Image (cartoon, one colour):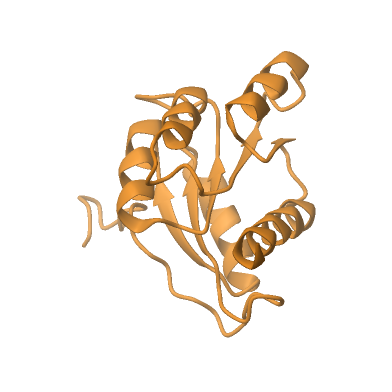
Length: 153
């Protein structure tokens, strides 16, 4: 479906899976990228696809809640500073809902270096908080490890 101007919508579209597979699970992960910056979201998606994963998008916190509950991804990459509902509130609501509470959330934010915010996000249920610009290899290694541990537990 095209938007005016010929641009395709960024969300909540599922992007196809490349030929690679999650190395330890034998199947791709479904990752929800909750990021309001389109360029950053596309960068995360391209990297995820290069590792064999499929990607869903949400451009704000409110949409993150809807897509997470309807699609039940294996992982959420969450920005903090987003419109409608910020990442802190979205994280709190994700973890409060029985339907989405078990989905691992990795926060990637420009505020990642703020220790008090980092502590709060971890208390709210993020498994880690990383600062932008993030090393995607490190971020995805952590994310894949967390998802693998949850699925084998």
